[in-house]
Image 1 (cartoon, rainbow, N blue to C red):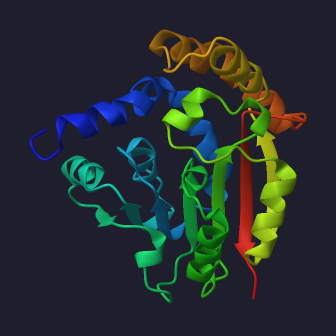
Image 2 (tube, rainbow, N blue to C red):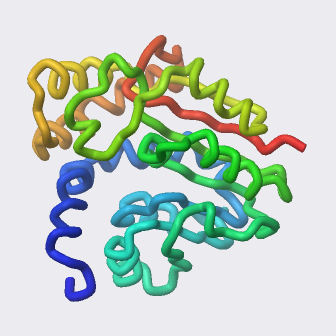
Length: 239
């Protein structure tokens, strides 16, 4: 990878390589957002392109733009997706009035110190079309672990906190629920109690193939959980 430094690649692999095995998890997440992922879609914080790759296969998306602040990751993304519109920067660098139909922000907001301002910019970018924000963040501050700090997470959210911040930014909330009940306890045990500082590939693969499909099926079809490892929100930009 001649355009990406060895250090940047190692840092990316620290958080992303084991999660490459979470195929069912990514597919379910995008499936839950799929009704709103159409037209002109902005992916915020593309990272090394694990979600980007799946977005490219969604027929309802007529134009996909991915924005990423890391120059190294942008170089990697351009190698992987030469035909895709890849922008280096943050949402603050984007002009308003572009006509975004949806913004997808997965595991990004927790990295941003002023998350309220980030949500305000999302709302501004979506205002022309009254488009949808598809948002996914880590949940529950009581399971904030050393590995969260390693990943650059400023916080984990409660449902009440995220609802308040979305409403303050000018969004109408369509759906807001905890996600992955079993993952909450797995995270607590592995990273809060055992103080692990990395993901085990085999454990991620086992959870993704054998456990998560059952958990997600129950949560999405029968009963949303009272707590979870993450929070999923769908919100529309108000007039």
